[in-house]
Image (cartoon, rainbow over the protein chains, first blue to last red):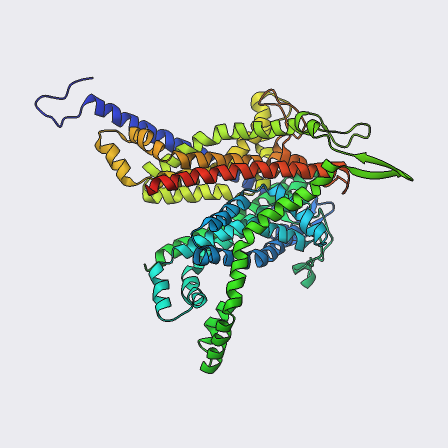
Length: 305
Length: 331
């Protein structure tokens, strides 16, 4: 280690040079770690897409599985997943949004509120298969819904509730307090303030959370395994009956369960079908997530405060 | 509720008297609406309790005993031996002669897969978090965060599929093992699955450290790495610990990916190339075949209770650890 230059106290010392080398090295290593996470996934997606290419066509999406799933397409499971998403959304969105409103607007800062927040965190951390057990014990048997679309949707709704609660809470918290105070000073009641000022100003943030719920609901398998998903059901090929093939009390096919079945339990399914199903699922989820990301960017650009 | 909002919007264009009466109706309903909001607010507690109660209720007969009438007046009671349940590695639930219900091998399976995945995911996740929060420019940061979020969006059944069709041949080719569905496979897949949560939580923890800490560190003559290592890490240690805990929670609770990637054989593992079976996968694979009401069925629910307890403890600890951060930063 050399001493600082006597003539120039600002000259770079060997110590500083070494420090910069370390810094550059660490920067390089952490960048490498980041790419070590992202590159394999991009590679995997590319591989899946190439393998799925022979199967991907309009018919693959709009035809029903035929001949023991060795021909046809994935329309039945796809529409089942859509219906699961919609029904679970109808259940979870109102409860979740109102719970977020309660936590941000009504709850005082005390032990009880902390308890609720803890419950939300724990609800988010319960393993998905335990949600499945809960759905089986509570909705299927106790509330006697049998194995049905409704029971599965209720189960998925409970599972996705914390996502909606947390993001609603954050969206509401980003509305500045002076907005509310101004409204109260005009003589508006608490609910009037929420309805006319707070909710309209945070609606994009709330929708982001709801969309994330949709993505999660679309991909989950474990909670619907025992609460309503079925391997195969005959549904109509065209007309109204093919658009809404399952009633609330029917069992249904779902994309995630379909992929599980054809990739582990079923014989003689063409390989491209499995890859095609996986790609459609990934595409669906990425599309939904992109909408949510787009919303967030739009929200940030539009913010006036 | 959204409908009410929409109606409200539309009525602003409609005639005034209707709008006023509608507003009055809404004002009169205010106590009802507020009541509903309170109930929804408390619903999270209700659901957590309900999950525990219903799963526990279904598992209870396994502990108290199930009476089956084999002949008139003769009742055979089947009961789970709790000592065997927790300490035996033998899990043979469907044996007609002498079924065995020991979950030790399943717990070891769960822990070994989770441990291996955390071993991979924590260094990579921390490194990525450091890069994203300390080195990357604003644009790069946004892009990397979006890519990592997409990683989180891939459904677990697709990860399982990836384990079967990509990792499996890769492992058999590289190692020469006959089957590539084992701890290694599931651990790598699980690591990629739990990395997003580790990155996002630890990045939040790093960003929560005030810039004055960084400036003070750099002003003392530390280089960037010394500043990160000696200032940021200690300041953010609780948040980083919470990130690791949440990653572990994710690993223990994951179902479909480990069901498809671990090889699914009950086994006390001795190497990375051994197939194992996890608690979650056992429930997912066997509940469909178990007859409702018999010992096997109730025991699977008891495994659910065990999983619930694991998740509860981990989340509680993570929450307390994070709260520690908040208390510190208030000082």
